[in-house]
Amino acid sequence: MKAAWYERQGPPSEVLVVGEMTTPEPGPRDVRIRVAASGVNPGDVKKRQDTFGVGMPYPRVIPHSDGAGVIEGVGDRVSSSRIGERVWCFGAQSYRPFGTAAEYVVVPDYQAIPLPDGIAFEQGACLGIPGITAHRAVHVAGSVHGQAVLVQGGAGAVGQCAVGLARHAGALVIATVRSERDAATAQRAGAHHVIVTGGLLADEIVGRVFASSPDGIDHIVEVAFHPNISVDERLLKQGGTIATYATGDPTPEIPFWPLVFKNVRLFFLGSDDFPTADKIAAASALNEALECDWPGFDVETRFSLESIAKAHEVVEERKLSGRVVVGLQFEELAE
Image (cartoon, rainbow, N blue to C red; front, side):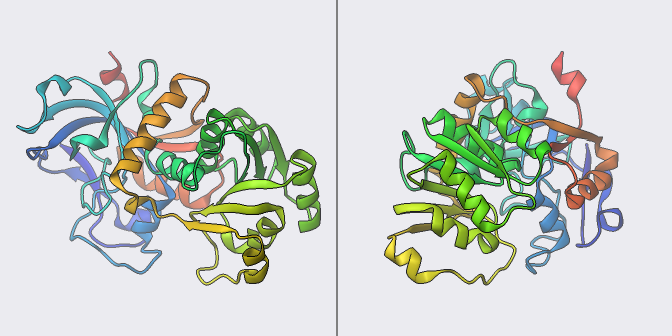
């Protein structure tokens, strides 16, 4: 089969290789998916860059954790009725060397989620990391029904999912974005109110949030913990909560006493290590949202497997608000 891989970390054009390798066989509790589309996430790029200094966890890494396609083989402890099922998958390259940037991928049975009728493979290929992270970020502190939820960075991949899932759960959803273009993305995802923060001072941002939710915010989904924590503290109600999954500064300062006096609860989220039950619950909720009122992602750019290095470069540049996918067999599998 054809696949992409790297055996050392570095710039995409220097380390990513496309070639032939042996088609993987499913283990007893695995399924083998013929991949139609492979999603490119910032986390995939960071692993290839060695952003966190972990080094090469395996001698060869086939990148990308998320993908979608059709099950065409199963292990002997998996029902053969799954063969032919359209699915999306998550975690293919989480603590594993073999991701979805290949014609075939093998994952544990529970990580292959039925793709709802009418949902394109490329949409399914975008769901895993951002969708599961967003679901946990929205619900980690409990139900948000009837609450005011602020999604910082509502146009990002996780942000869009968080907006859609929070609205679907019955929250009043306020999203912050950097530009008018991003505002349209957050509105499409389902935000009730969108605040464009570009050029605004902290006091102005706080004022606009309170204009949308005069009593303050119950829960914040935070994409930029370091620069935003002081604003977040001012916005939160007594007993409010923050769920954060990213920061620019790895050792950020926090307004400790103001957070203490408000009895704020703070959750740090790393999607690879969520409990399995939470990942499965998130997958179910994402499918439910797609089948109801959430439009999913705007897939902005598509690349062939042979152009995977360019796909990684586009994600690195962060100039797009839409998602980037690598397509393998869209047309053939759509028949």
